[in-house]
Length: 364
Image (cartoon, rainbow, N blue to C red):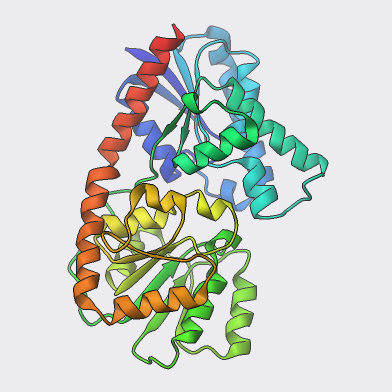
C-alpha cells in the first residue's frame, strides 16, 4: 500500500482538508501533521505562516527517512510546498484552494500591488504551483486564473468541488411557516453583504419578508452602521453559530442566499461553500451569476441566478421566489438532484484518489 504524508497551513479539521485527508486515507497509509486549532484562522496570515513553519519542523525526521511515496500539502500550503520541495524529490500534491496573492492583495487589499509583501505572495503562488506535481482547485475558473496569472500548467490542475459534510447537511422537513431569507458569511468583501442589505431595504414595503444574516467579520461594523443610518427594519444581524446548528437555520428559511454578491474578481471564480450546504439540503438558493457557479448550477433548474453587485436584481430575485411556491419547490428539487449527481463526498474523494494515482504513475 502507498505511504503518504498530509500537512497543511490551516487546521487539519478545516472541511476542505478533512475531505482530502479522507480521500488519501483510502489509497495510502497516511500520517497527518498539523493542528486542529481554529485560532490558526483567527490569527490571520501570520498564524498560518507560523503553523506552516512548525509543521515543516515536525516533518524533518520523515524527510530524512524518506519513508513515504508522496506528500499531500493541504490548504493553506503554498509556503510548505516551497520549503518541502527543497528537500523532497518525491511527488508533491497541492490543494491550491486559494491564492495567497489574490486573497490578500487583490481581494482584501491588505497591501499595495507593488509592495514587497505583494511580490512575495505572488512568487509564493507561482513557485509552489510550479513545484507541485499535481494541483487541486475548486473550479475551472480558478484554474484559468492560476494559468493566466502565475503560468501554472492547466494539465496539472484537477477540479474538485468543495462539497459539504453530508452527515450534517441533508434534507430536513420543511418549515411551512418560515418567512426568513437566510444569508451567513464572515463579512469578507467578496461576500457582498452590503448588496444583501440594500436589497432588503428595497423590499421593506413587503412586510412579510424578513432577512437574517448570521456571522461576524471585518465588514460587520460597516454593515451595522449602514443598517442603523438607513433605519432598515427587516434585517436581523445574528451572531455566528456552530456549524452543527447551520442545518437548522437553513431548514428554518424559505430562501437561502448562496452568493457571492460582491464585485471582486475572486467572487466570480469560486462557488461558495454555503451553496453546497444549501443545495445538499434541497433548499431554493439564489447565487451570483458568474462562471464558477455556472460550472455547477443552472438558472431556474436548480438555483436562481442574479447579477452580482446589484441590489435591485437581488431584491427582484427574492421577491419572485418568495411569492412563487411552485417555482421554489421546482428549484429546491433540482438543487438536491444536482448535489447528488455532481458534488457528493464519495464522488469528490474518487476524483482525488484517481487523480493522485494517475499522477504517481506518470511521475514514475
